[in-house]
Picture 1 (cartoon, helix red, strand yellow):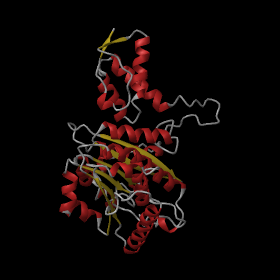
Picture 2 (cartoon, one colour):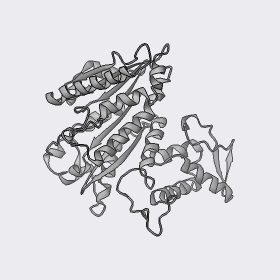
Picture 3 (cartoon, one colour):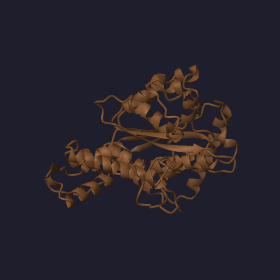
Picture 4 (cartoon, one colour):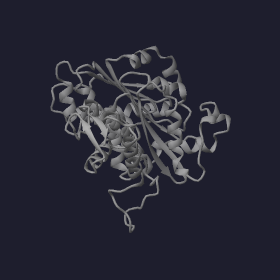
Length: 379
């Protein structure tokens, strides 16, 4: 597909939505590792950074990442200046020379403006910025320093991959990221183009098209199909979380895919998605054809996605496929819903006298890695 330089005009509404999702995802992610005593260094990678702003000065992803690392009240700056706080490194990469020069300038302007308004005596980001000009495939496959960072358990890594098209994130790149400890990533992919050209060498060079099957009557779901393609690459024995968000622009469907090794990372991304899509938590295009706001049968507390998941969870509980709350909370989360849905189903079944719990019942549905376990007994 031909590249369009989105930095040469004002960002479209779809691009702004994508950037909002980036911002909110990172806003949730960053403080977790700032306050983690086992993390010595935080690396923030933007591998396709662009020039940093659009034509009217709206911030692009690298500027957004720096802004959110400070916090809206610069609260993270104060935390990072404390003893034993982790160091932070921003690695912004842009391969095209002209855009790389603009990136350098825009990052420098943002940093200078931040310092001019700061009342602190020192800045935790004084030596945090590195703007590179690398080919991404060479960087992830052949850069020893980058690969050492990826494999280090004491480093937290947030990797943003806002690629053009689809070819940069292939099976090997995806699995390398999945297998890297303390590494959360979010990437953009042009799902409609994979669907449209899935039998051509331009696609089959990067994807096994025999493992991609579309329902032509459901064009909105093409990004779900691509997400499932990547999900099926994850080894079955590996406990991993993946969720996506579809963005429709005209007749085309693009999307984000987020990956994390930890339930807390997934909790935070799913929360962001449901904030933007209150019906299904995964798109800007009413992906399941729910009743819309302003129509007779619209109910903000009712949706096809939520009702379907409630039915599945109830069935799995009553068939003893889900026998404890930890399993249930994780099942709901891995299927892209907020874990509180599981708690609501359990409460309903308790009220109906269909189940009882062995252990102390609790309704905790956040920080599920810390939830006290109880067993579910069918009556």
